[in-house]
Amino acid sequence: MHFEEKIALNKALFSSLYDGEIQCFKSPLKAYRTRAEFSIYHHENGEISYAMFKNKKKTPIEKFDIADEKIQEYMPILLNNLNENLKHKLFGVEFLATKLDLSATLLYHKNIETIIHDLQELSTRLNLKLIARSRGKKLVFNGENLRQILNINTNEFLYEFNNDCFIQPNTTINEKMIEWVVDLLEKEDRKDLLELYCGYGNFTIVLAKYFNKILATEISKKNIEFALKNCTLNSIGNISFTRLSSEELSQALKKEREFNRLKGINLDSFSISHVLVDPPRAGLDLSVIELIKNYENIIYISCNPISLRENLKKLCKTHKISKFAFFDQFANTNHLECGIYLKLNNNIKH
Image: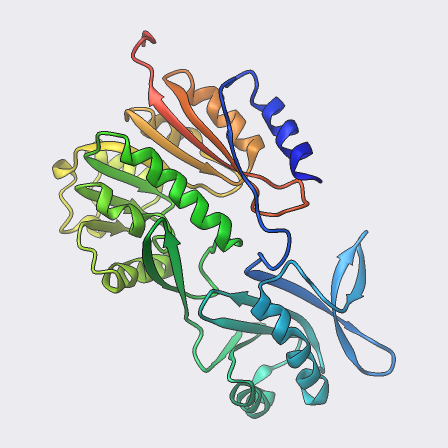
């Protein structure tokens, strides 16, 4: 789907809720995608190719020009090596790239411990972070953590994460999304931030300097580990990361329940002026909406316009949309990321 058509369709989707200006951010058309997942096609002659499903049919492919340049460069190199002695029972290959690093994950329908020496040799020969998986087993060669640099306006931020974390799939657009949030905040009075679904700190790390303190929650233990590491990498000391679901956080804020995971964090010390949410495709459930509607300023990053629209129908009963942006994460597809800034509407009678 062309960019202009995608924008028009989504403007129409939100027309009953917002009729103001919408900023639109375009993606590069090629070499933008940092994660690429391929099936494997086994030819009759014994050779293998990368493959994708088209009309539910597995179809061999030779190139994937929307992938990051490092992925495109390594695809044929890795394939040639796999064809030598590591193709048996291989059913998938996944790549993950950053500005600094690249990893490849091989998926097998067999016990990978039987090929451990060949995998080690391959990782060493290609100087590649290599992960192999089969049912109940995982082997890592040359490390699995990736480093990333994000350039936000004139500042540089360093991150570390691995393949198990949720990663924004388009670094160019990710930087634009964070800059959009920063531009909103620079014009605002700010105290403390509450962030839900913080991941490994993608937004949190950059936003630390704009708030006195940040309380950031995430249910993934691995994400929290990397978030804490990313604070250290960027010399940040005003973020409290805690592994709580939104429902648990709501219970804690209402003093309905105490959590050991909040040990050392005084919730009463936070004066929250802004909330940032970046939920999965299903959007926010009712308990989260009930929690965040009590705060004056809400920044909502959404990867699904449909669930966002349903959430906004509820949030617009208490808040008014102040700013709206579209981010084209996946060029030439139907997919669109949205950024919404909501401010408490004091004219509404509760």
